[in-house]
Image 1 (tube, rainbow over the protein chains, first blue to last red):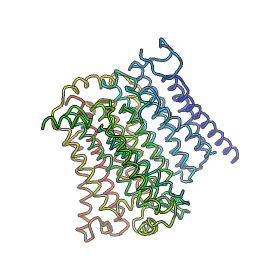
Image 2: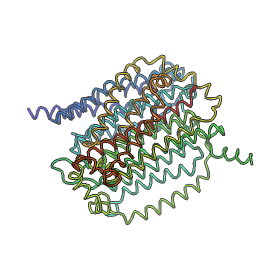
Image 3: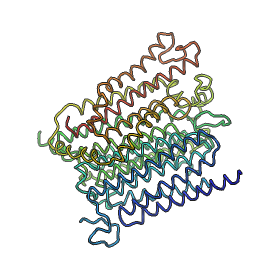
Image 4: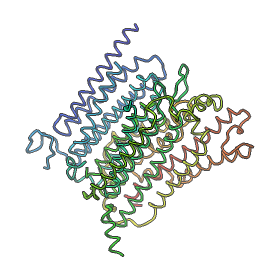
Length: 113
Length: 97
Length: 117
Length: 307
């Protein structure tokens, strides 16, 4: 029983780290703001959730689990809303998505339509 | 496993800092700050376990809350008229310090 | 081992970055940013002095005998909040200066002062 | 970077990073404070000031060569000075010899609180903290004096229209989430306030978190709505009441035959007296910090709006 818990905790941590890392690579490599936002917004929530679940399995103390659960719930609420607000603000302030631009050379340079 | 996860988070934080530095538009920087904040929450929770005192998760909770507040604040101010006209960084950001 | 002093070097480098910004930049807001960095360097200096190898946070718990030094923590804790209050005061001054002179660049403020004389 | 907005963003990242550093260095209370102050409030204040004064920095620099020379000379001297310092993490450094062992070993018997930082902050160094609270109060009054009087120029009037219109009409999701979160944040601030004796936390942190909740409300629902909800005179009074509460505890302990801020005489049992005194003054600190932060923020952002 103990070993199952340990294994699953390790698995969750690894998966979470992998997701976070892919988000990190995404924020560096993707060509424009909206694609970067996609990379971060998607992986952030699940990666954070995975790592927190992995931590929860590590500790038998109920107070610690409750605190972790609170962080988890808040991440699930806050992270998508922040992403949503950010994307909306960017769109309203005339930041044009890559696919809509007239000339896209694929680089990260900013274009002024 | 905890150490591995901590290292991974640190690497991701580095990436966020890089994007914050080069990010051509304003919103890239805000995105980098947002991501950095979430990763800080994770890092602090992980560090609590690594150091063997997981009672200090309060700090991580504060981070999650304050991060939200500061992102909303930044968006609020970037919406104002003085900023809204030009989403791109004015001036050359790469040349200077 | 001279490398055991590396924490002070980090602090010195940070301090000097802050000092450089304060001296070299004319923009008042940027000067305040420089001061903030300098301030944080001082915080880091104090906190790194308080660290003891193998010790843990100064909240008493069973089964732990070694704690880091709590005194610098207390000093810095209050200093952070006082720091933000003083930064707010500095920003308020900058805002007022902007309203009076129409600029927060040191040069143009001085020019305007010289013309008035 | 010429763009001050980007500079402030990087400063926010710097604040987050330094708080993580404080966690690594075992300073949980300091990390707590830096988390709420450095990452949240200070970024917001800087941003407000930047929107008030203009976003672009003039590229001109004052003699960067001379600045570099000064910086390098000072840095070299400082590094030379560090050569005599004790090594990082060594347990027999002078700083760990004098009062620290007493705090660590005796504070449990003398104050009955597990969090040494709180007991040192509120009891052993109560005078010091009183001074800090007065400084914060004075800074708040200074901001009030600087920003409430004086004329406003026409530029700000033009700006003011579009700000709250944008945030107000849209973002339904944001407003609902904010409504859910704010009671939670306030509750958490109270937890931090009164749990500070046992874990990381205390009046300073709780005050800042409390203020952050109100600032969040003001930002999402508009400053004029927040003004209707929150009585500003009450906050001005509250900041004074916090300082007076702190000083009053000291005076009461004087009257009871002890020294100023000596809580042993507040109750029959010294430890119970310490508990009561620390609780009261932490409450006073929390009141002052929260109201000063709210006053500062309201005055800064009220500067951009119609009065």
